[in-house]
Length: 163
Ligand code: GDP
Ligand code: MG
Image (cartoon, rainbow, N blue to C red; front, side, top):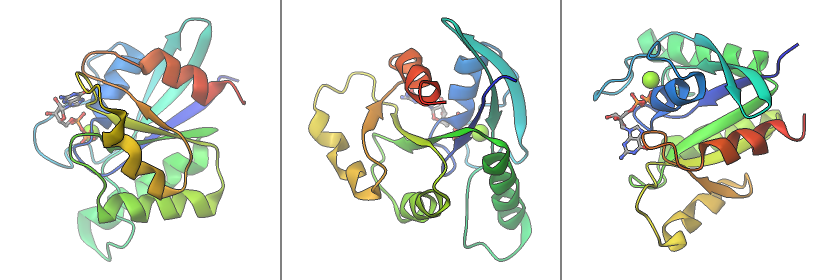
C-alpha cells in the first residue's frame, strides 16, 4: 500500500498548487479565489524513490455550522482520516490567522503525523518571518514554494520518512 498524504489548510494557501506539484499534473483546480476546490481530489505521485497518494481538499472551516463550509470541513476530516500523514499548509506571506489556529488545534488533538509547510516562501531569506508559525505547536516550520518547487522534495521526504 502506498502511503496517503492529505493536504490541509485554509483556502488560498496553495494546497492545489502543491497537489499539482506533488502529482505533476494539472488535475487539481488552481484559482485566484478562495475555496474553489470543494471536493477531495486524489492523485498519484512520486518524488525520488517515494511513491504516494495525495489528497487535495477544499478550505477548512472547522467551526462552520452550515452550507458549503460545513461540507468542506467534513470532506477535510474524511481526507485526514484516510491519510497516513497530513501536510498542513500555511501562507508564509499572509502570516498566521485565526483559521490556522483552529486547524492546528484540530490536528494536534487528533495526534496524526503532521508536517507544517509555510508556502509562498520563494525569495524569502529571512527565517524570522516563519517564527510565528511555531505558535501552532506543531514543531518545525518548513519553507516551501509550491509554485516554484522549492523545498517540495524535502517536504515529501520529511512527511514519509517516519511511516
Ligand atoms: P488553495 O485554495 O489552498 O488550493 O490554493 P491554490 O493552490 O488555489 O492557490 C491560491 C493562490 O496562491 C493562487 O493564486 C496561486 O497561484 C498562489 N500560490 C500557490 N502557491 C504559491 C507559491 O508557492 N508562491 C506564490 N507566490 N503564490 C502561490
Ligand atoms: Mg484548492
